[in-house]
Image (cartoon, rainbow, N blue to C red):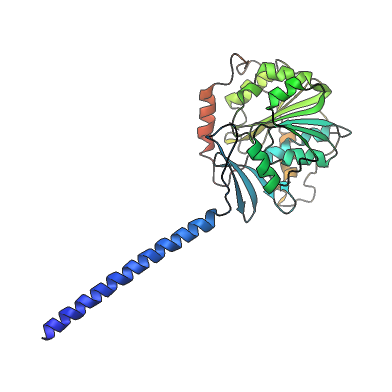
Length: 326
């Protein structure tokens, strides 16, 4: 009898343990689901209008608000004052330091709207071309873009310049915010079109990502720009100079070797200065260089940037550190 009672008691304990284990397992599953939803609740996936395989996302984190393109962070702002901390965007503001008075700027590629907003805030008249209506909706909702202050077209940058009947002091092509390498805006013909839309002292600048300061794409775009412009300078951003990151090339037919508006340097030796936009401008300006003559393939409408090169760069973009920003 005692053995029978012990057996029944043991069976009851086993059943009870299994019940507790089952409850515990489902509790952990529910907790994991809640944590997952909480972690990604600030991510808003949106399909863009003209390329169904692409996707924009907005990600809210403790340090700021991110715009992800194809799953990768390409823009970063402080939502309290809408200040951008994307490094290449700071460098693309350098042309404003090369003119006495605000002028007229054209931007191909809206991004988070920070570049257009920055120029507009300094008194520049800004025109932007970007065909993605979904991106505009994101910018208006999450990045403070005000269409009433900035002229925006749904044409792509090249088509817009082809139809333009005015000239610009600055033309910027933001390949990074476009999430790739717009091949039709990287050819000799497009650069010639851009030069025809610039004023005599106008500046053309293009921002893109490369594997280091002297990647083949840097040499190729520099060589192609030299077919059209007298002055072509590479403005490096990433450190060390052989890793993947953003880079800017500026071109003009009139020399711009001296700053008209001084840059803000670290005269007080602030240890955090290196992480701000002023550092990015100073670093790029002080380290600018010209590519060696003879290097690089000349890109044309008939011989555009190789898709193999684009694929190599896209693969490299997925090997960057988690805290990478262009």
